[in-house]
Length: 193
Image (cartoon, rainbow, N blue to C red):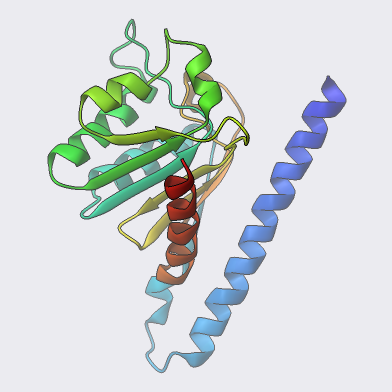
């Protein structure tokens, strides 16, 4: 079991490093072709880890103007813990929807296995667009695309343990090019669900 955990962590770290390298190459290409001095505003990477995820994502969701699109493995909601960090994220999504932001979530169907903490029905009752993926595939992504400009990508699930206990690594990418790529990815998942 420990070997599997180490392999999974190593694989995830490799993916995150690959994304960072790819993004750095895209950002440097943008800088070479950009005649303005302040082009870096569209090419920023902010690493976040562990307890840094909640405040960064909470703020990003609250500042969303047009869209929040999420592909994720699980979305927990804890009725017994209304002020938990996880529930605050869910409430951010509902508040965004209520202020006119297009909020859509693709969730792995595995999340349906625990009805006591499944956030699917809660967000759906509150008007948020949400779908389960096909039972023929696993959506293990932890992806948020905001306003076609901001991407949050990494290891953090939307759960108590991920937000308050686990060691997790993520990045926030400010890049319209990268956001466009992941928006197309999200739309493929949404359309297939």
